[in-house]
Image (tube, rainbow, N blue to C red; front, side):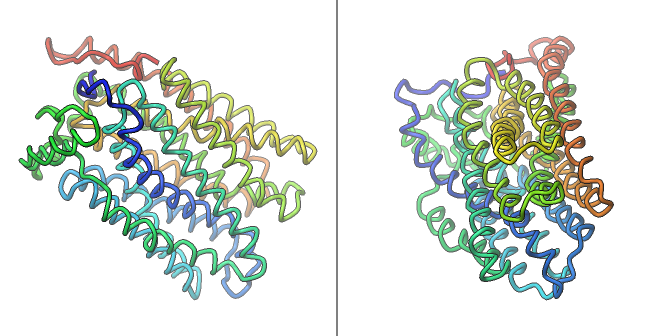
Length: 449
């Protein structure tokens, strides 16, 4: 289907750069906040006053991702009501407040409440930033723009690991969470000053002149009524029901399961990799540094995946990347030498994180512009159940001394994700065949993958 309208010849990355840069900053802090917990968990487990055990740590990790699930499901519809700009600002404020609650927590209960609050903001931010970047990005460069955006997540993950390595040992884990308040101080003022509203959202509110002005400023074609998200409560309900139109009713659940597997991997690894490696016999510093290495691989992987997906299709890249992630997880189970392990961790990061992001890029070929925010919200939201299961299951395995099974769990998730995303183009073709005459739209390059 055609998900973007024609644009002027001058519409390139230069015109979208300001929007991409602001989204990049917001998602950088998202990645930092998500990875802070895993980066300081060994220190928190050693803090007897907090009372954290591996089992409780896994449960709290699931509280975080439960908040993310709620945030992602709500954000897709809320953004069409209050606007994408306001939703992004509110999300950044929420997860900053959650980090402050964690820094002040007297016990595991209040700490878990802080992580749930942070999860609400983290879950709402990602799908909206993705939808905005897809809207403003040049046609045929959606996957690359998505990959560039997501390099920031791993930059944030590396920053969190650095804080865990250099701040927590001397000053305690609480100071690392105080660093999580920085987004409210740094990013929110910049977003309030410079971030534009979506032209499609402005058009849906009847503000055509403003919508056309924003589109002209960023080198986009003027938005069409068909691209505007439906308004009102009824419109938001219809936007969800539209995900199950004949053209997409088969592809939608496949995207959900692929996202489940991808996010189980992302959050399972982000939460438990240091502790799994520590249990495998590596030192504390090395175990935490593996989290930085895997995020460094993630940055390179986003750039490679974005370029490759724009040429061969997001679906093909995602499926192959999931398979290579499974292979990396199996290799990590083999207790290799330290140098080889660093290489395997880095290469696993190249494929792990971008496999999930290419699932998001594939939605551009399934849902039209008017359904993009809702479709992405539900793909990320339902996928967050994997983000709930990953940390919880990892905690259960560590608590029972079955750390090696954690790597098998990651490998199984990778292979399942590969199968699900590979079936999306088949499901889309069947859906268009069954759709009423004239109801289907042409397929985009991202769906052809």
